[in-house]
Length: 69
Image (tube, rainbow, N blue to C red; front, side):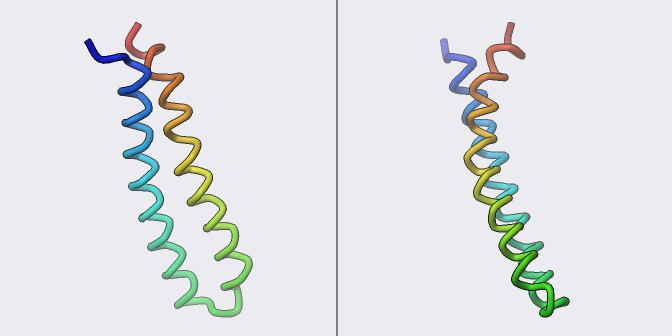
C-alpha cells in the first residue's frame, strides 16, 4: 500500500508546478502591461513562484496522512 505522505507530497508537487507556470504567466503579463512596475512586481512574483514550488510538497507531505486517517 502506498504511504499517504508520499501521495500528499506528490499532489503538492503537482499543484506547485501548476502554480509555478500560472504565476509565470501572470509575471509576463505584468511586465508587458506595466513596464514601470516591472522590477518590484517581477521580484515578488518570482519569490512567490519558487516558494510555492518548495512549500506545497512539504505541506502535502504532512497533510496527506491527516486527510487519509
